[in-house]
Length: 112
Length: 113
Image (cartoon, rainbow over all chains, first blue to last red; front, side, top):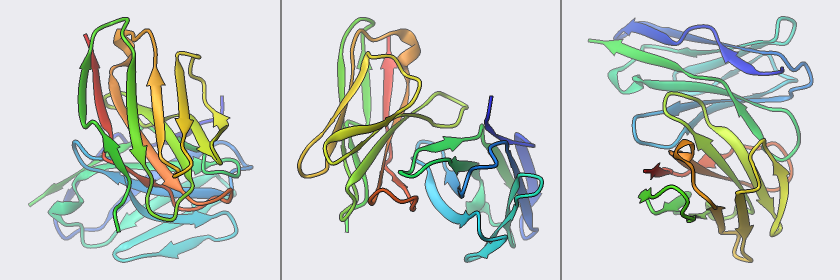
C-alpha cells in the first residue's frame, strides 16, 4: 500500500556536524509535506513544511529538500546541537484538510 | 497565546471500560484531528472534526468516536477498551480546509490493564 517511510531508523551525529534525515513517499499525488521533531514524552513539534510546487525551503538551521522525480524528502540540520536529539518524522498530507500520514521516524543521537 | 492543550496527561483504565479524552485547539484554529501513537511508531490518523462534524476518518473501529463543540474543542471517546488501545493519543489543531501547519498537543498517555 501507499506509505511514507524513512531510510534509517537511527542516526548518530557528532555535535557541530550537519545531519541529514531521509524520507521516501509513494503517493505522487501528495502535495504537502511536514517534518516534525518529537522529544521523549512530548507531542510532535512542527519544524518545517514544503509544498509540492517547491524543491527547497529553508528555516533556522534546517533545510527541507523535495525531489518529486524520485519521491524523496530530506531534512538537513546544520551544526547539530545536543538539543536536536529526538525522533524526527516526515508526514505527508494527501488531501485537503490536514490528514497527515506519518512515517516510522528516525532517532537522532547527538554525541558530544 | 495557549497552544493545543490536552487532558488528562496520563490515564489508566481497565479492559472493557470506556474513556474520554479532551482537546482544546490553538487559538484561531477550527479543525481538530486525533492521532494514536503506539510506542516506537509514528502517529496514526484516527479522525478529524471541522464545523462540529467528522470530516475524515482513518482505519479505526467504531469503538472510537468523537465530538467537536461550538468553541472548537473536541473529545475522543473509546468504548470497550482493549489492551491494544494503550498508546499516546495526540490532538492536532489547524485552520480551515486547506493544507496548513498542524500543531500538536502534548498527548494523553492511555494505559489499559
